[in-house]
Image (cartoon, rainbow, N blue to C red; front, side):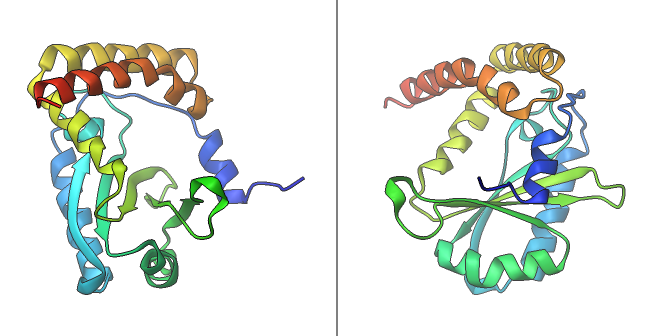
Length: 190
């Protein structure tokens, strides 16, 4: 039986806390984007996007800035980006591709403050990754304040029901996210 690495266990066991929207979140995104651009070779990264609930004005959220960073390849993440970010204290997580293929399908990092609290989730994606659709969800919530309020209420309720189970918290939001994504695609004519 394989034990999970310590940083994975720690991440899974951390309490889910939802707080009111903080107008400082966009600036925290910009600061981290600038930090990443300073730390990483320019040829390795492309656009950097703020997504998730902290990117939706007025929406309650976990106080963690979610970011998407475009990379040429996941090999660059594994071989060049991960060592650089780990040397600066970021925790590295990755998911293997489906169908047992070698390599990495998706990679992200957690950045923490001096007290050990998560401050940023930095996700690295290749240009063609379906994970870029997360921006569609962000944009839908920005354009539909009633849906954003409903989502905020759902997140507060689910966090109260599953404060120590991040997996259950995420799963409990699945139906809402799927419905919002269907509506977002329909509004785009897709």
